[in-house]
Structure formats: C-alpha cells, structure tokens
Amino acid sequence: MDVDGLEFSLGGDPHKIHARIQAELSSDQILWLVKQSVLIDKTELLKCAVIEWLTRHPVDWFRGTRLEDAVRLALDEFIYRHKHEFLS
Image (cartoon, rainbow, N blue to C red; front, top):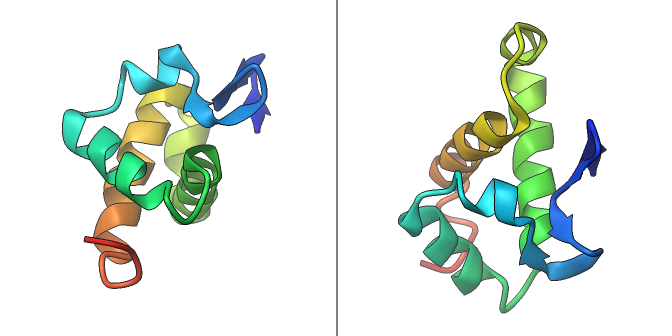
C-alpha cells in the first residue's frame, strides 16, 4: 500500500516495516506484529488493519488523519477486534 509516497514496507520487503510507520507504533504493537509474523507478513497485517479501519472510520480519514496515526489507531483496533484469531 502506498499513500502519498509512503509504503508500509521498507524497499518492498514485507518483513521490514517502514521506519516512519514503525516509529509511531507502540512497543506492544511491534511485539504483537513480530509474534504474528511467524504466520503472516507484518506489512500484510498492517494493510489489513488499515483497510478495516478505513471502512469503519472513513470520516476520520477524510478529516486529514496522518497515515502514521491511522496505522497506529487501526492496529490497536485490529488487535482488539481479532484477539481470538491470532497468536497470543
């Protein structure tokens, strides 16, 4: 996913989250992504979380939410909503 020239992955590597996005994630979010990456690419998880968040919060996005903020908010919501579907 590329929004305003910012990619989720670093150099197209699905195992490396772009530093600008990673800097906005909490340590708990990063640990969760690392744990899940045994089964699915971290960047794919981020994309799924953001797509789901955009579906639920389109008004917030169009009010000018920064991509980095949207990713953090989306991942929090995604982890909560899907906590029984992933490794704990």
